[in-house]
Length: 250
Image 1: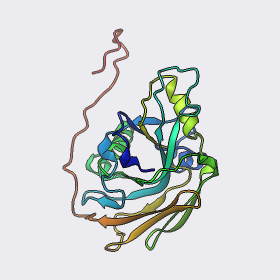
Image 2 (image 1 turned 30 degrees about the vertical axis):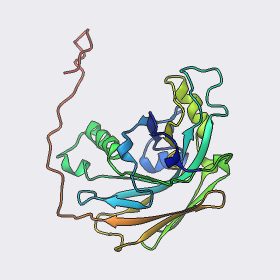
Image 3 (image 1 turned 135 degrees about the vertical axis):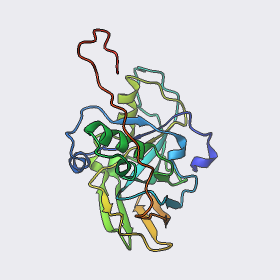
């Protein structure tokens, strides 16, 4: 079946870090709850076979991932949770970069975190196959990422902290899901890294494959230019006044 045959999702969301190795690579401690983030639909490339890297993108962290569509409406705090609610699973690619962070002078810790979120929310930061396969157990999948520039990297999905049903169940303790909602499972390993001064060759193809789900081929349009920067911005100094009993943000 194909994702394009179904209605557009009401909600698009992702998990960025979904394994111990992914947390370690990001310098964070593993959390008990999934880092489930709602993102704009534009974060997913309209072309499932093209990765656009705009001129302002800089140092990349790239990883293959699985995504899935929710197969039924799940009211908030549904006793069934996500059991039996996965319509199908497909192949995908995601990346983050520090182009936004580099536009922030002397960033504070908060700025570094916000710029990382902005990267996840940015347009075309995910490329997802149109093909979906029903009945695939996510933790039985091994994803291989390969290209001339990146080399070959293997991401064993048995290391996922949350599989599709578990992700829906955990998220459902707070929010409802609708049929055809799209959720990306995120990184199950250490991402492949590519510095700003090393570009993909023109027309290079990234291949993501697994025995159960086939092959996703993505042509890279690497327009990154070290001379192009996002206009410098001055972070607004948000802080909590501890003397303010109302807890207002200043």
